[in-house]
Length: 599
Image 1 (cartoon, rainbow, N blue to C red):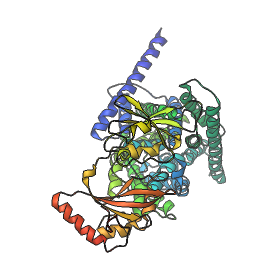
Image 2: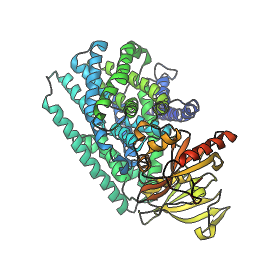
Image 3: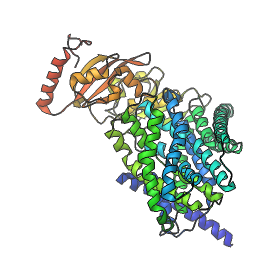
Image 4: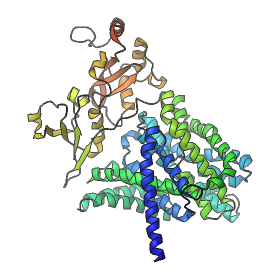
């Protein structure tokens, strides 16, 4: 009976911690605290040195749960990544995830030797453990805070964080084996082993993604089993790849990437289910990692660990980023933000459990240093990521607002799904009546009545619009039904331009602030850099106190746009607009119906 009681007690405590982590996320959102940090602190407070007094030191169980959780999270990251956004970002991201990780590990090792008093190989192991950015933390914080970045820079950060684990894992495992055996330099075997990790991980991940898509479209599974099968398949791909000495983390990310860009049955249910599972994995993983640490024991490693964290964030990471991105056309602002966006998360603590499992001498040094580095990163990066993006002028706009979208799978086919949006008076869809050609309005619910598009006519405030659209393109409908914070009365002028006009010329004419990297871009190129695929009419990007709005799109590019100004108050606004009109006449551009600028 004792074992039965213990099992029930473990279930009680485990579920209570998950519930506590879930509820605490509301408090974190209220005060703007990084949610992942809250999950970690819940585990620390529940541990042996906190009020919870739970003694937990099972590194094997942590490694097991962490492997499964990271597999699901990385798979979800790939599932939501559009292949079109990788254009121009793959080469710099791969360079960062390989050369960047090795270079960062080497620099951190130089600091670890004097700070920790370790040997060369031991110091390099410290550097390897904290060298990689954590895709789970990066993707989670960027999406949770609604940060909108340029297409290429955002893709570089996401792809790098998802693909740099192979180098870090391989370096860590190799150095642990090297230190444990007391052998000499690994020599060429290091490069060969890393190449094997990448090749096997890529091959098995791509094959696994196609296999999941094939099975989903061929098997007539009962409703509700598709998401469960996908989660189990993701963990299977990770484990199978790791067993043949490939990179399991790279494999699951690529499998998700392949699946997310294929026409697949029940994709709406799969992505919705993964939202829930990803949250659960984050909570469980960070709470377990928090339980492992003993603050009283960690204090003795605090000064050198803080020194390593500072060196990593202020020297090693920026040096690696600027070196790897030097051959590419990134501005110093973009390079600086990519440097600051190198969040460390569960992966570093996860890697630090490997020396503990191998029972290396002084293994607690690696674990405690990694924990401090992750803690500092979550605090500094988590609280300042949006602020840094705005200060460096790399954020496209205010944090992305959530769109209410309801997706319904249509049995018997995988090319289309039914998606529903509530219509409000401030959405682009109601103000412009524009829908892309691949989306078809099939019915409208208005005041409890179901109407055909012909019966409904123009969408009204309070309607629910049901559309047929390809699953891979559904997300591109979101901006049309996103509630604008500004109403039409806020817009006092709109001046038309062709898509081939340079952004810098427009900004100079009206005295508008513009990012350095945007000055040489045409208006069409600027829109292309800000969207995953082809832009849609009605999309905007800010230019100082104005906004450039896409009017018409021809063959996937903005051919006509309008510069719209916001009110700045009363007659002052009207006088300012009149001055802008006089300036506009000096620049050749398209005319309105009256021969002058269209307003």
